[in-house]
Image (cartoon, rainbow over all chains, first blue to last red; front, side, top):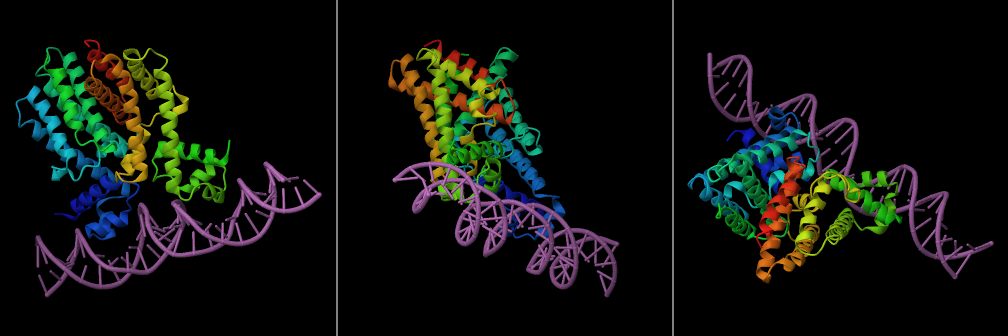
Length: 189
Length: 189
DNA sequence: TTAAAAATAGACCGACTTGTCTACTTCAAG
DNA sequence: CTTGAAGTAGACAAGTCGGTCTATTTTTAA
């Protein structure tokens, strides 16, 4: 693997576990076994490494979720599969996503609160992308675009709420509870 | 106001806006106009100031929400009022809670991911307290304790999801959308 | 009035921060 | 075999970090 990717992987792992401001550039270098100059050949600053890490996590997470959902028929089944997928994530059964420390994008926005900051914007874009993925499937089971938007929104809120509850309160069944609520919302449709 | 409280207020404001690890003790001291030794007379370390700030925010937030909800009849009306309350919060109409930068407890857990850390534990305790507040009201409109637990859980997830969506994506109507979902969940009961 | 308590300003400590710079090595392509 | 790119190790800079210490002033209470 190229040095650039090694740096991104190491940085993402450390940032995700401890937060971004808690991790120094020197620690990233030491754990990745890369020289400092090499880092500054590939990135112009720590912030630009942070951006790359967020971008990488976006790709990693989205591809994983999309792949999980597409293992089921589009619509109701795929949406239910989403909750099973995040349930696996909460319970550390998805090595790709590392151990569960909440949502990296939510955590990162806690450290970059300014909505105009590039890092915050990338986190927002990720959430919007996930939302669109949900909407793609709610359209399959809703009769109007407005209904699809509304249902996707409800499912999105349940999913985000479950992530928070799982991380903050350590509730490892949060995803299953959210799935229960969601299934009751969808079935009468 | 005593120096101790001045320090807590200033620290909370800065921690909430920028994250905890991004704020140094010296900045807290400068903005609060307090000498360094005074801080270390009242707190044995930065971490203990952080704990005090979290505890203060817990008190501040819980009392505010409880007071807003008790302005309405217990049960359905109070639960709906909760969504109106957080809607006001998102839109910066609650000076007590400062400008909206997401949930301080969620953000803080992003920086203290170890669930055994005292700071993380205090954040978890806050969320549990809020959940119990909701359950108090769902009991009024549910026929069994299990139903009350289930409904409180659903409303809690919607609320947490709305906080995340409002902060990360800047969706200022997230609370109203969550309220819509919630009202549709409650009315058929 | 006096004595104790609390707060002040600010020097100081060692460790760490991001980032630059130099000198040396590794390696691959022509 | 040579040339140039890429990587390494580590010193270095200027500043910040949490925290301690001293010396002085202000406040409070007996």
